[in-house]
Image (cartoon, rainbow, N blue to C red; front, side):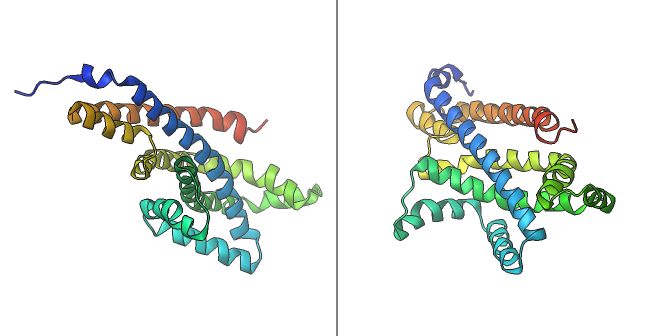
Length: 220
């Protein structure tokens, strides 16, 4: 008969807490910077010059068609060959930002393309500049339309942060691995970490659904 001992695992709560903190930090930076990068790339793909469109298109295709772990390894193990050595945390954030930026680019671009022509004509009649038209007329309603898809992609990237443990980033999954090796309670360790990831994903979704309409694409 299997005997569970969750107490032994929970006694390692400082390690779990540090792992949770790093996972939240990686997610916060990558969500903010990745969304900004994706929005900028979406604008470039729609309104940029031919060369810029090709460069951004190549970046999007490269990231969307290669595994995240390869992107992470390239940044952490490959860039030092070019003289650019990043810490584990910086490499993790950069990989997550680049990954989210590529997917967010296509999601935001889809939202921008559905802007009714009447809104653009109204902006022109008010003599708004191209930047004012984009930032005040086009972008807010586009973000409102694609927000659920963008939130889902941010959560996917948050869950993907577990891969960063492969370069020894002490995030949540790495904490589970270390606790498992210390206590020999693998089953209990991964059950607890699975529950934390589940609660974290639900909390993040609810937070972004609350933040979006109030602070990012508010109609006020």
